[in-house]
Amino acid sequence: MAKLFRAVIMGPPGSGKGTISERIAQSFGLKHLSSGDFLRENIAANTEAGVLAKTYIERGLMVPDNVMTRLLLPRLEEMTRHSWLMDGFPCTLAQAKALNSTCDLDLVISLNIPYETLKDRLSDRWIHPASGRVYNRGFNPPRVQGRDDLSGEPLIQHDNDQPEALVARLRHYKDVAKPVIDLYKSKGILHTFSGTETDRIWPYINSLLSTKIPSRPETDTQHIPMP
Ligand SMILES: Nc1nc2c(ncn2[C@H]2C[C@H](O)[C@@H](COP(=O)(O)OP(=O)(O)OP(=O)(O)O)O2)c(=O)[nH]1
Ligand SMILES: Nc1ncnc2c1ncn2[C@@H]1O[C@H](COP(=O)(O)OP(=O)(O)O)[C@@H](O)[C@H]1O
Image 1 (tube, protein in one colour):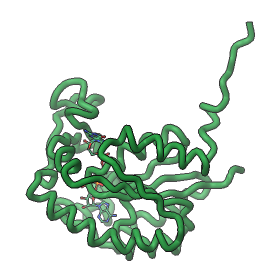
Image 2 (spheres, helix red, strand yellow; image 1 turned 90 degrees about the horizontal axis):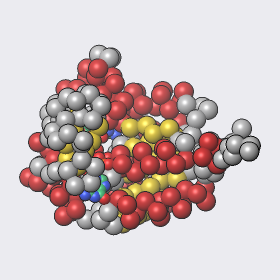
Image 3 (cartoon, protein in one colour; image 1 turned 90 degrees about the vertical axis):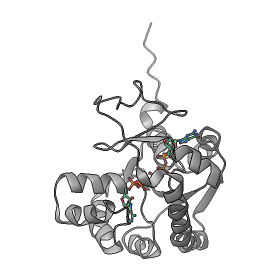
Image 4 (cartoon, helix red, strand yellow; image 1 turned 180 degrees about the horizontal axis):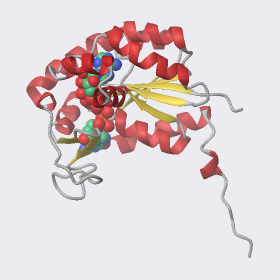
């Protein structure tokens, strides 16, 4: 069996983690795991951790480390046969240390995007709350304005994506992420990408990953029909 590959993508809110993770998952066949999706699944299923997490998310707060690790680590331990890319976890040093004790990461991608860019993107971000699908009027607009492409349900905007709340969220991200970034830098697995556009950053991430993971078998093998 090919060696498994485990990666984490980090970056401030709106930096494009979700967008880039989807591209990585498609191009390299990694499973895209998202802390936000895990939380939404647990909330929908009314699990003990989900009920607890909801009380924090509703107040715009981060879910405590022990709830996050109790929720995520068993899921990661189950993934013994898959390569994966985790988006949104770890967020704090305590989470990173807990993850460290469960598995060895191969690579960490850190996105470094200017504040003005984040502000512009997030003030124009529209979300389908039930699925977590994300749209942006300039970048990936929904087919029908204000409606989710798959369900047709209405899209909403988060209050905490508005500029006033965003300043506080970004400051908070910087404070908690710094020791995590330093940890991964010291392990020699951190790769930082800077820029204002996902489409310009993506080729660099793509070529880095191409040196580390073979591209998906399905896209490698072209079946040319016999004449
Ligand atoms: N205009 C523009 N918008 C972008 C670009 N890349 C992503 N976006 C949009 C898609 C979304 O509406 C918003 C944020 O992207 P993501 O949801 O992928 O970001 P991320 O997962 O880091 O945010 P989160 O941690 O969930 O708050 O920006 C870009 O290069 N240009
Ligand atoms: N690693 C984490 N640690 C603590 N809380 C988290 C973590 N990941 C997600 N959350 C919580 O779940 C919420 C939703 O996460 P997500 O879908 O990534 O969206 P966003 O960060 O844009 O709000 C966050 O606002 C936060 O309250």
